[in-house]
Image 1 (cartoon, rainbow, N blue to C red):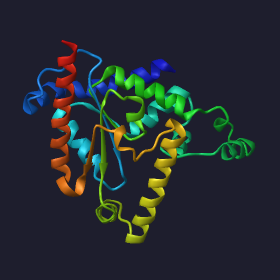
Image 2 (image 1 turned 90 degrees about the horizontal axis):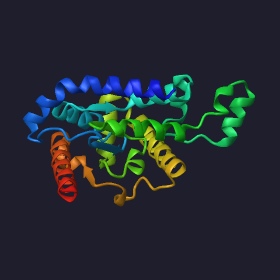
Image 3 (image 1 turned 90 degrees about the vertical axis):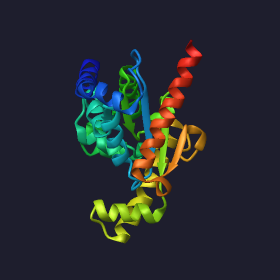
Image 4 (image 1 turned 45 degrees about the vertical axis):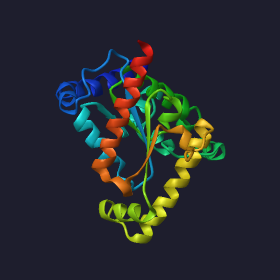
Length: 235
């Protein structure tokens, strides 16, 4: 299954190469370093505008974006249906629930180890570099990446979900609280870490204060500072 995962990574990387040099020229970030290249991970609160930020970074850098594609890659690596991975994706599922599902005929759950397959895929992506990874606690595994966390006030998050998710205010608030708990529990179970620990990130950005474009500029500046510092150490 490893060949399938690497094939998916190769296709993602290939899609970004055509844009990469032009993007690097316009952002002033210079020529791409030898592989393995840099990686930006984005931990985010639901409704913080993370996908917009990530998409802007893709446009500016020409890198590959890993979000739902991670689900496909994990499914290929584990040789299971996509819906099984989605059941575990950034959520916790108890051993009792796994047993119950197995006993009711969903045997695929019995031998599925989400964390193990997630780590393999994230490391494969990181080996290629030039990648932006959304969520999945990637910062706790790829500690050498530029690790960003995007947060926003509850009001901004509610408004964003109401606008883009077509939810009522009550539905948006329920979704936010449920997702916050699921993601915190997921990080605690898979990585034994606290998602809110500021020391787990290079930069924590409050989107209320800077907006989408401001957040993008901060990330690009942090990228330059971090990787220029790294290159100087290696000289």
